[in-house]
Image (tube, rainbow, N blue to C red; front, top):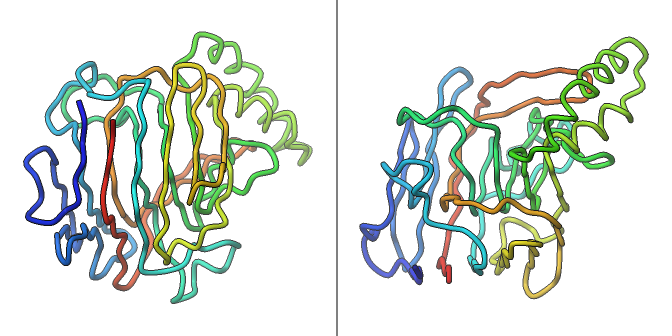
Length: 267
């Protein structure tokens, strides 16, 4: 299976389209724009395309070896620090593109732990602290590989170390066990989101590499084996998952914003 979509006409039949709340998906000037005109706290807004549609998770189309190339930009810069999410110049919510297992399926599949190989953005108050010494928000190359047999061995130590973190404030043991459980690898990207850049994932069974404008950003060993589905989206969600055991989800407010894809190539 190969995809080479320059979005020169209407959205191709291969894509499933989701627009929730004030979200919109449109093809214009040879680009795909996914955005929202307004988002409010307490209301969910989403603009998304994907290629798994009504497929069962076992029938998702992508597994290694493959190469994905996407040229993309956004309406706003990435929020880089706490407090910057309140700036009118920062993108709010989450956004990105790549591959995942749609773990929160609404089609009757069993809920699963997440598996992902993608370029992922989250603004504060999101704080998904999956990798030690990495912020829990920002514009990232990211791999999450939770569905591993050895991940089960991290559950009890993580619970104990999270309790210790709440009592003492010492979070380093819990951070290490959280990374072992999630199988996460991450790298912050220095490419400004609001400018056009070329993003590439080369996904092999043993390693996944991430490139931005031909510069290596991340080399992640032992990535998921799939099958996964392609998704590109922008929404107004946030998630907090910390080594102290905090788990919280919600929505944020935003004005008009969007993420735009010039093309998607997967082979």
